[in-house]
Length: 214
Image (cartoon, rainbow, N blue to C red):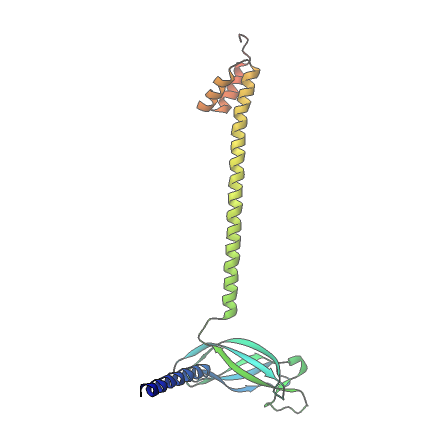
């Protein structure tokens, strides 16, 4: 008894799931397609089969020869708003326009090659995938250049720091050399440079000159 009830319940769940999937796939369906051999654009009619307003439809068109063999496919994103239960036409780039292909249901009196199409809904009520990709690329680019600028700034700061340290040490060395050349205490003048300023000590050593009483 319980086993039969469980089997019925599982079957019901799978049925509901399958119905939900098929209903989602059929939310926006193709009503018709038109393209003559001289059209630069084809016209696709889409129907909203839901109870809500649908916009921004993403779908795939597969192009077939008259035997049903796939020739090519392309994905489209259309910024279109379709009210519940209504149909809206959208224009697509014509398939093989340069070779004068025409949709097999569109009349052609010139013997041009014909094609069929298969429509498949991919998504709806979403943003343009290409714009999202571009946004991600821009963010990645900004992140890359931001990291590059930060690295450059850090390198510049390190260079400035090393140059400042080198100049400071060089000034103290210059004070020591000048003090030695003028027969004065190297240690005393270096200590005075630390307490005051090496530039000031250099000026003073230049002014007072040699120590003749050394």
